Amino acid sequence: MAEILGGIFASHVPAIGNAIARGLQEDPYWKPFFDGFKPIREWLERVRPDTVVAFYNDHGLNFFLDKMPTFAVGAAATYQNSDEGWGLPVARPVSGDAGLSWHVIESLIADEFDVTTCQEMLVDHALFVPLQLCWPDAASWSFRLVPIAINTVQHPLPSPKRCLALGQAVGRALARYDKDARIVVMGTGGLSHQLDGERAGFINKDYDRFCLENLCPKPELLAQHSSLEIVELSGSQGIEVLNWIAARGALGSAGNLEEVARNYHIPISNTAAASVLISDKAHAKRELA
Amino acid sequence: MTSTKRQIPGTLVFDGDVAQRGYELNAMCFSFNKVENRQAFLGDEEAYYDKFKLTDAQKQAVRSRNVLKMLNAGGNIYYLAKLAGILGLSVQDVGAQQTGMSVEEFKARLLAYGKEN
Image (cartoon, rainbow over all chains, first blue to last red; front, side, top):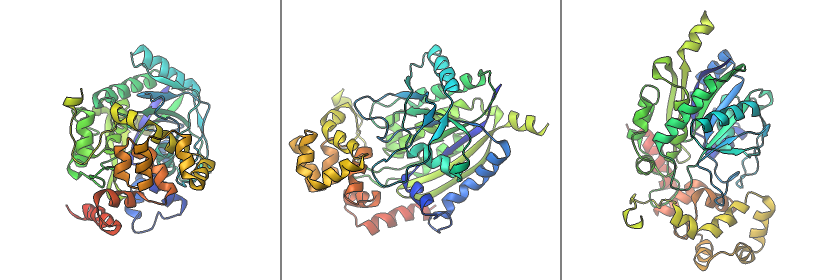
């Protein structure tokens, strides 16, 4: 049977990818951010997931505005990265799990989430940066990936409430999967930041703290705002927190969860960067027994 | 719907109206995922605008190198970032230009967020 071991939430700023490529993890500017992944990597070594189900947003690598799905589920055998136009090294490919992808797709559509399905899907820094933060030795990557893209680019965006419900439906699908899989859920992007407009450089620590405080125990509080309200509170790219909300939904009821690690650091590039690890207590208990 | 749009200070929401206005410009920027297209743009900018049928407003905005004008011409920042890369501009350069600060001031403001409680 499949089991969900926990969830990882992480910023995906492209500059982090450059810092990794240049080996700047111990540099004073970068260290406070990278150090946040030490407990996450220790946990990953302990729980040994073999499957990553990741909610993220594409930044104009796979999807253009000619066709912009609100929710898209990858169902590929392999996911390639590619040149994104501004010099980030192209990451090595990641294996998919088409069987699990189609199980999730079947289950979501039966649950009335009419997602787009992608048998070919380029995946951008929004997934590869967090994967590299969690597993720095890319040559050893042995996990399989199921990517789920949420439109955070072209409004109208899905509501936070809908993203939470999507995540909950993904969580139900994963719980019903009858093959062995040790799953970690991932939500990428955020927290508050804005790249465009006269308000560029906007950061809202109060809103970020609100998100971090409530993510594990009360994710419904993050879903109380509309997407445009979150743009106002968190910046036009801070809305990437939709990926966090969906990923948190997939982890299910707060009673089974505990927050294991949290880091919040300003600035990474123009972003209030964060990482959170939430573990499933029932799983942890079974492992100890 | 237009009259009831939510107004967010200093922010142009990239919605259907803006996406229609900027389609050609964003299509051009999407092409910059390929290195040969970046080189073609650098080789003959005006010809490259015409290949993607940029509107006059879009051409003027790109010629001016002014990011706020590009946004007003319908550019989306995720696509414009690829153009900024060709022009050698970091997101701090882009932020400084849009806010009327020097790059050092813009960076200092970001660092200050991290220091205050």
